[in-house]
Image (tube, rainbow, N blue to C red; front, side, top):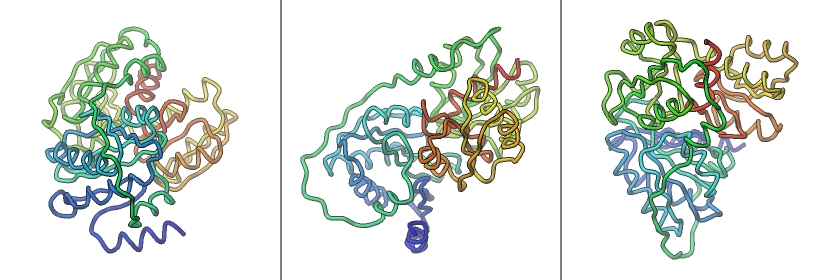
Length: 343
């Protein structure tokens, strides 16, 4: 089994290496040699010879991004650099180029960092991770080029969501992370009045994981607003705050599921750690549910195998709508569903 092979190899290293990516404490578990190693091996999976590159706002992300870019170009891959950009933006843009790489450690502490790998708009699966862990010789290639690019994500996401009614007052706490610009711009474009906190890259009054933090500032401000949103450092994980209370991840996911049912979707995939209440709700509305192993990539993998239309992870409020993005996308779906669901 690929999973057993991966576990045996990863046991030899203090790095966390899974289908969710490579993660470790920079200059301790994770060093520049690791970045070079995994980028070189990832290049074997990139048939298009083109790769999106993005990073979060961690202190080490910029230098790791430079190393990652050079390692890919050395193997003949042309790099299209988004700079600081949220994970959902990188996933969406990678559909146009064939692959993507994100320098991030998601919601982990600031001293951590890592890599997320994207193939054809989705995270890598266990079979592809197994291939990446094997050293393969590669003929010398013409060095790839690096280009800086802009994203059309905001325009495309706004079209998907549509305008919200009533010009709701929304407080956005990006935690100094990669969503610092995209989040408020998208909310404004769909018709919200936006108040920003912790919107300076790399600076924040709270921790990188909004699910674990008390979010004191956002909780206080949400009492005078219609709703509040908090993101992790790479912008794919979202916490909703309403009337001074943090909502549970299952509640947030449930609102996304309700919206999907409303527009006629019937086939869902939920991770096994998602509340049974959501599955019962789907069944009562005439939908069908498949259960996957824990992990965003596992949810997406089963979605593709079963041709499912929506789903997600209850543990992280990770609603996934594969027709737009094959990853947790707090930047789009949760906003639309949560704003309209509570107004």
